[in-house]
Structures are given as C-alpha cells and as structure tokens.
Length: 116
Image 1 (cartoon, one colour):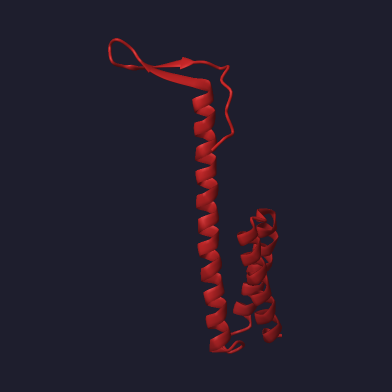
Image 2: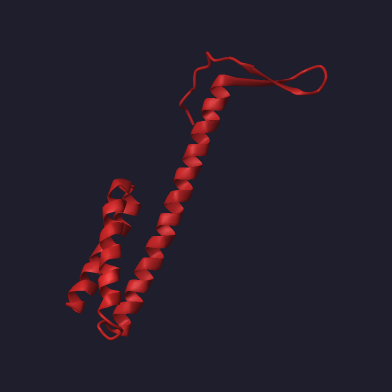
C-alpha cells in the first residue's frame, strides 16, 4: 500500500507541475486536495514505509512545485496590478495645479488601447 501511495503522490506532483506550467489553474485545487490526502496517508503509514530515495524524490518534487506555485502567484499579482493601472490611466488624468499640488481630473470617457 505504501508503494502505491508513493507512486500516486509522484503522479499527482507531476500533474500539478504540468498544470502550473500550462496555466491550468483550475486543476490546482483538486490536485492539492489529492496531494494533501496522500501525504496524510503516507504520514500515518509510519516512518519505514517508503525508501529514503523515494522520500527525497518526493521532497524535490514538492519543492519544485512550491517554486512554480510561487511564481504563478507573483505573475497573477503582476497581471492584476497592470490591469488596475491600465484602468486608472483610462479613467483618470492627474495634473499639477498652479499651487503645485496634484489634481485628479476624472475623464471617465477614456478608451484603453490594448497594444503593448
């Protein structure tokens, strides 16, 4: 049984890695649930159910996926910030007054150009 858990966890890690690389973020939630269940099963099985090599391979896969997940999160954050900035530029016009302060003139009728 422990061998099956190690094999199943390795498969889930590969699927998760592929989902992160391809941008299939809708698959991450179900894979995370499966991964958590398999890790719990592995922990409950005791310390000698998997070889040191298997555990090292799983640990490396978990670390690699954690890095990919962190990068995906950072990319989504950057995309959100860019979208917010494009919206702000399209709907606001900041100008300096004669007193040297910044005044926001709301244009409200701006159109965003989608060219990079």
